[in-house]
Image (spheres, rainbow, N blue to C red):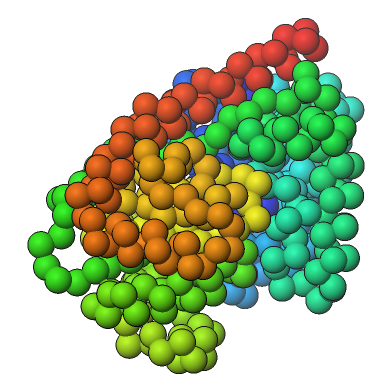
Length: 388
């Protein structure tokens, strides 16, 4: 099939949404689909692609690659993306249009593929009601939450089919009447197993350092502040513990909070690069996921599982983690419980190692990108067959 994906984000890029788009497009191309992706003008050129990229024109100025809405994206990049999509639809015959995340869905709806007889698939990576207030938008948080909920109810139903990344999201969409049950599928993200096997964990660490690692961007929705609070408590029990933030962002804005907590000397930053991420994760004693209020499945959780290290996560963002089986899961926002779980795995490296091995086995068995592509292909076939 000839598929036009829409990705209102940098691509390829080492972050949740772009990773899902890139790996799904790559896996679908491996199944002999002809995949075209309309996207922003920026991407990591070191990552090879096997699909056709159609980038919007660049202004020459530095582009904002941070997650979430911004004036530059909404007023400049997204209109350009709409023009690009319209031209592609006018010039070529596609079997399916597949829009990832909300901005791409809006672009797709404005481009109106349905008037050409092309079905529209919306790939719902998150719900806006809990996520929109986490971004730095100059509006009251309650207003943003209400706006997000209205969009969650109104926009997904305009697609011919909705793919949700988690059971919780699919359940909400159906129960709230946002999408009929027959027009939605749950297809979680995959993970690059082979990439993370390049730096297999060596079991419990031999030195005296106790290293906690967080990998990801530092947007507000990541709840890094909760991790810093928990780390202060960890240091009270284990003064030798260290925290490494693996991120492409600067940690300068966190310094006042770290100074106030008395943990600055024990926190360091490591640059986030696709090639080096497996090693950064494998160097950890424990991997931390402090995100709360998450309706999807953070890509970092799947990456953590593939890394084979012990994991501590808050409940709403734990994805496929099972408490006591593949990681330790605690109630959202309970900083003391989060700290206690970190301390437990730091003090019991054999337990951390066992949980990490179980997590790697589970994610390898159930979260391959080839499996994802097969399920997405079934969605395409049903939609195209229904219009034949």
